[in-house]
Length: 211
Ligand code: AIR
Image 1 (cartoon, protein in one colour):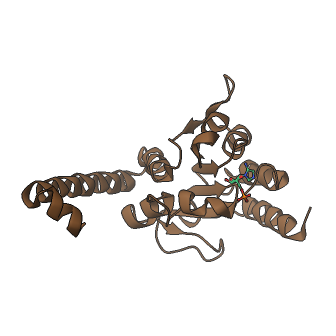
Image 2: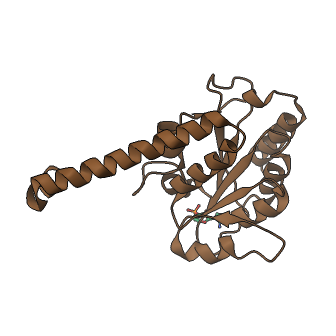
């Protein structure tokens, strides 16, 4: 095992041994099999990702230092964890997740052997894990769990929805997040309606040009 992997494992274990209040630990953990998944999993890709949903729409902040958490009440953390390249890190990440205060994990992986979401779900059980198949060809390996070993997953590439669903889980006991989800829904409805009005009033040619 590399020093870098060992350092990460030790940091996660040390964090699990601390006794921080829920307000000071990340609520959502986001892991992905490779940094090549970053655009799909987080932001900057073809469509908006989990980062855009959590930060821009729901007011979450990212924890980058456990000892200096952001002032925002609701937070998430982000790591690259590969089921096949760093299996020990995957095991420790999932096993320590509850003790580190995580309430839900979003796990994404690509390729045909996208095993990070399903393995994380098995190890972190009963913590809920939402799988994101990074590509279409990853769908079967993410959702193909045996009976008794549950995972829920979103459609290929739709990490934005995974973030919304993670927030929905938190909203069952955090009314503040429920309010933020409803506000997002209202903004989305308004945006679609305004787009519809503009398309109708401008006509297709002008609308397409201005877009
Ligand atoms: N992957 C990485 N470790 C195990 C798996 N299944 C996935 C990543 C990424 C793809 O393999 O999630 O989608 C290719 O990774 P890379 O690093 O070669 O670009």
